[in-house]
Image (tube, rainbow, N blue to C red):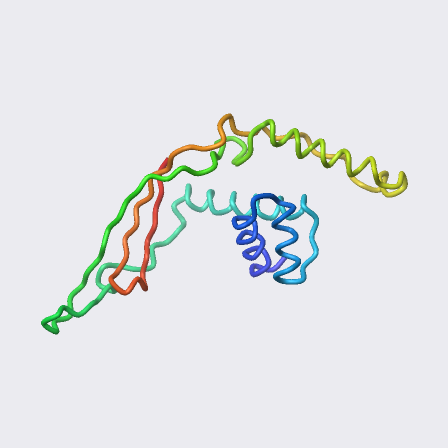
Length: 164
C-alpha cells in the first residue's frame, strides 16, 4: 500500500464514526474498494507506528522561534510565538491494545463479522482464514487529554503536543 493511500485511510478513519462509514467514504473519495477489516488493520498499524516513533523520540520538530517572523505596527521585524493550552475529552486508548473501543463494542463487531460469514456460501466461507482472537478493549469510552500549541502570527508554523 502506498504512503498516500495509508494516509487517506487514516484521514477517513478519523472523519468517520465507524469503519463501515470510513470504508464507504474511501470508496467515494478515491474509488478504492477495501474491506472493513483490512481498513481497520491499516489504520491501527499506522497509529501504532506513530506511537512507537513518539515513544522512541523520533518525531522531529521542524521549526524554531526564529522562523516565526512578523512585522510590528512600527515596521520592525520581530520573532513572535503564541502559546495556547486546553483540555479536551477524547476516545480512550488502552495502553496494551491501543484500542479506542470498549470490550462491549468489540464483541458487537465480532458478532457482526460472524453473522456476515454465516450468510456467505459454504465454499467462500471455507476459503476465509479464521477470525483472530479479540484484543482487549478499553475500560472507559473517553478520557481527558491536555493539548498545548505553539504557533506564529500568520499561523504558517504550528507545533501541537498532548499529554493524558
